[in-house]
Image (cartoon, rainbow, N blue to C red):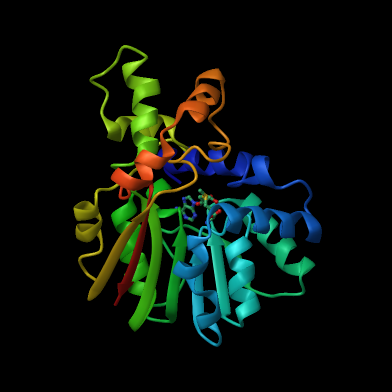
Length: 268
Ligand SMILES: C[S@@+](CC[C@H](N)C(=O)[O-])C[C@H]1O[C@@H](n2cnc3c(N)ncnc32)[C@H](O)[C@@H]1O
């Protein structure tokens, strides 16, 4: 594993996404409560993933994390495989599915080198993962390779021109007297795992250029609107103050496209 990827692995193997904020216990009740919190904060996942349509389909999820979405695919009756770079996430997802008497072919794996043959999946789903991998174009090429002709990729990656990006830039560039620091560097150093990337819509279109049909939308998230705990890395008085003063109404009305999440549906 390259050093850059090892850093990504170590970051997420310390705590899976949402584990510190939303997972109280590693049992059926704990995982159920985490899923409730997840879909309350991020209701758009349900429509985007359209879990119920996966019945009988061969689905690969890349970057399962705590496994909430994976559980939904399993409940829908998908013929399911899931991978994550970290042992921790695979262990969580195995434990979660076992607690609900569900099954999936889960393994530690790398989005950039998928251990699957060409053209075997109807759906490849990945929420908030591929931008963490050092070679994102290679990971997207792997998604394309393992999809059947006519199969669908449903991928969320981060959108560069977001309120979260703006807040991080204020905090770590402007207020740190380094206004020359680019948004790319800010995301890479301060958002989540080291090297995290965010894309403009046109950059994302280039990333998915090999696909036949590509639909892209951005979503204003609870993080952009400061409606929740900001994430496992971000806390403090400045953030508490911003939470009180944040112009949510204005952002919703005037900047509806300034959300961190970019939802990409692409057909091979
Ligand atoms: C922000 S979490 C998202 C997890 C889950 N999809 C969710 O929405 O909660 C990012 C996940 O991507 C995984 N990841 C990062 N790089 C990866 C790679 N190259 N291959 C597979 N998984 C990767 C991490 O281990 C971590 O579990």
